[in-house]
Length: 380
Ligand SMILES: [Zn+2]
Image (cartoon, rainbow, N blue to C red; front, side):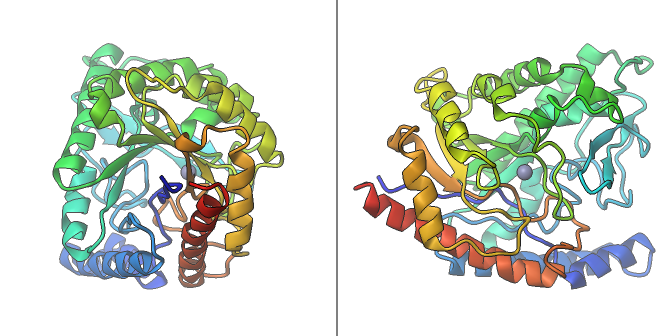
């Protein structure tokens, strides 16, 4: 079996779409006009991703406000916020360049999604000729919608978590029903949970164990056959070409992360300082039998925050080195992160989102080619 490849999911939204989102927020264009721009961006994303040679593609999440907030708000400025939420929640993350992203706050029960990933996917699938994947958000991220210490009146935390697990499960099932071949769960908060940033109180609460347990509550509702195609993505963040938790040692995360009974993991790795150290950890902690499924580690061989395009030979060399530590039957190749998890992102290190899109497709093409020549080199 050659080394499998898979993207994380997002792509920069074209400048034209980001402008349309702004106009929609200001009430200058209608929802139908915004959706027409989103459709164009999805079609372009799918066509260009298919042209890279990737055997599985995404629509670049062009309709999502962000990887985390698509179920509950239409735009990052707060247009279309779901009922029972206020805009002033916890920081999700404070990034290294000083900017932050904030979550809404739950003010009452019950909690429910207003948009499922499948609602977006079902509009994109007819545009694709290749199999599609869909990324969804982890319950461990959305649990941060509930106030850290206070109780929401009339809606105990335990009830919220049960509703949240039901919605997350439904999100995954609906994505498969809509035709997704693979569904990966975004889990960027895992590494951030080990950061202990005093400016961002939840990161100092030792919540990683709780995150893992909650995510397994959802994963354990799926059979082993289903979980083969359910993945988890980990990264130190990726927004405005900046990160939030790269300084956290992977050794603080991986032993816990691989306790999740997912069939595969999409792992940031190309931008790690000491890759062999992490390959070894992956080899040690990934499980051949995670409740009936072998965990495949897709290592990041592409850095979406850096405009320099990796060559196929660099990709090959990373994979061949990783195969010294990770069972080659359980080794795959991915990007370190989505190329733009948040819809409004001017990709400052790239100079513009449109140029960053051109770069992204070159990077994806070289990842696909690099995995092919690595497979040859390894005799797979
Ligand atoms: Zn990521």
